[in-house]
Image (cartoon, rainbow, N blue to C red; front, side, top):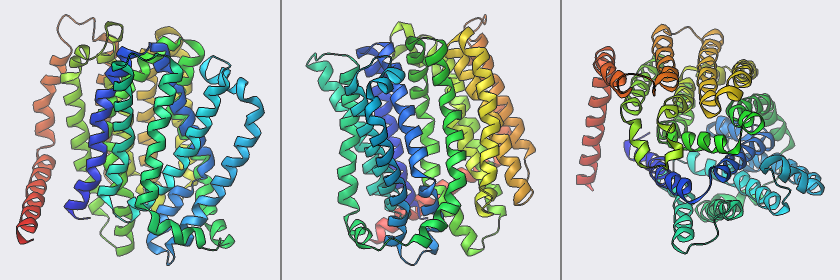
Length: 478
């Protein structure tokens, strides 16, 4: 993929993270911690419903795109089964709307249910429409569609604050849905040329069966992965308070800055690696990418460890512990991104059932740790449990890939990721008790990381300069 396309895809996650970083303090100041916690419940509900109804066919679409002669028929075969399932589940759930609202948000309010249901539908449609832009490498259009909901949410929140509108959960919920709905219209406009033939295409039952054979195991692994993500929030909802859940939610939102790396990489990586496989590219190239990604992960850990205390200047005083918790919170996006590189063997060999067992192992670790730590330590226990579980996830995913595909160097990966997680947990446990500022520990490690990854950092710097030079020459030629 050319640099211009990579930059186009990177623009969306970076701008979205910027808007998100601005929005988090606005939500924290304008709404109660309890309402912030309820918004987190909405988000994990959306992710659960998507994983259940998509049926793994979004990943099947990505896997088969380059080998499919008819992309319109492939899109329809990927979209239809999950959409039908979503409609059926929605119809079954309507009689229980009050109970569902009570279970999720602690209030038997049918309005909460209807907005949640509409948000699920919007998220489902947006998931598949975004895949069209991804696979066609339309980076700028993809980025614009990613930024619009974040920007609109920011604008709506600003209007609520400036106009001094009522600040309760229904207001926050409505603002979230409105901003999410807007992006669907953007997707329809950008993908209109692809949607027309997809709507007219005949549904191929054999193709649907083939896609489901690939995607079905991913349903279970996806649900297990949702459990891995959501366990901490569910534990807080069950064994702690909405206030602690709000602190956890703000922490993970701040950690979303580190998720820029995940967002950019995961959008670009899957199409590229499967293209490499189709072209017979030397697999050692993947090892090189893994080493460079590990270097970036370590640098991000250091930057967050050194500067996380700045969060105190953004949030109200009752969020003072966030600066310690955020170190564990960034483990999730960083190790997930790294595992996307090291686990490619599972997808290449089509051994997707392994993904289930890998995720279940990490989920069990998260459940056990959350049951132990959350009742005692609230949000702090939740982020620690999640961080350790993701280390288990990373190691298990990497080992599974090495087993079914090929052996590759892993000791360095495990040493540095384990040290990063251990120091993050120590920051949560001891950050406020040390006789010196915790950031000094992270600062002292900067020369060590620079020395250990000097070759990878030089490679990245050289590649960046070369790519920017090529881009500049291309612009001059035009």
